[in-house]
Length: 280
Image (tube, rainbow, N blue to C red; front, side, top):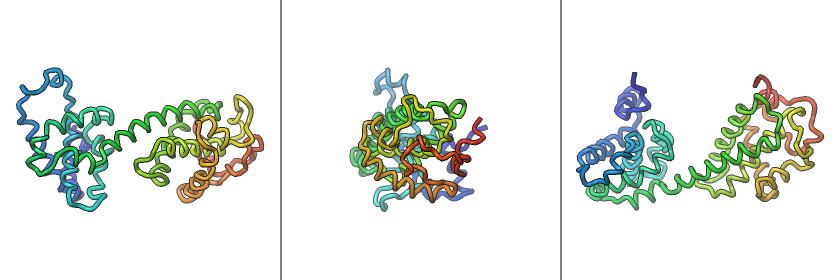
């Protein structure tokens, strides 16, 4: 049985039942671009590349370029239901293969784009392709840092570790979308990552805070130093994180201002119980 999220034609059929005006605008340039690619003389391509063509990644690239074509002349943020994440997932590919294939597909489509009154450099700038690629690189690095450094501050997570890391990473992505620009610099992301680790540490039950080198009197400073970022900046950002979490999570209780993990309260807050209890 075909998964509706893996085939654009099926996505279009779904849009007819649950109208998606964005897809209706993307469909025509997508099909035209795909037809052009299919009709290209493969003999003119590099033989090695022919063997390496990833059809799923190619499909995602065609959708991405079609969206860029359909967005011309429209207000910024148009066709927002077809995010880059949706385009990649609906094509059954991944971000790495997508960005690897994108310049190749754009090069093949050069005559088609010219006939459409456009060119890839202008479309690339319009759809922020390079910026999204940098985001991918930064997130990959940040994910490794998060997995490496969080256990240094909560070393006794035990079987809860996968759930805690997953929760923390999803929390980081959610806060990132709300507190920093869409295409932030790496330092801003590291500052936010320090805040997220601090939230996890501040709400971990007392027994989980057996620090390898003793409990620091100032968790924000210790975490910032470990991540090689400025404690003052992280502390300021932490105030915004704290305020936002109170709206996002009704059971959230701010504990980070206590400033000392060694004086951790023994009575778990509702947020602590939600976060840690039942993770066995």
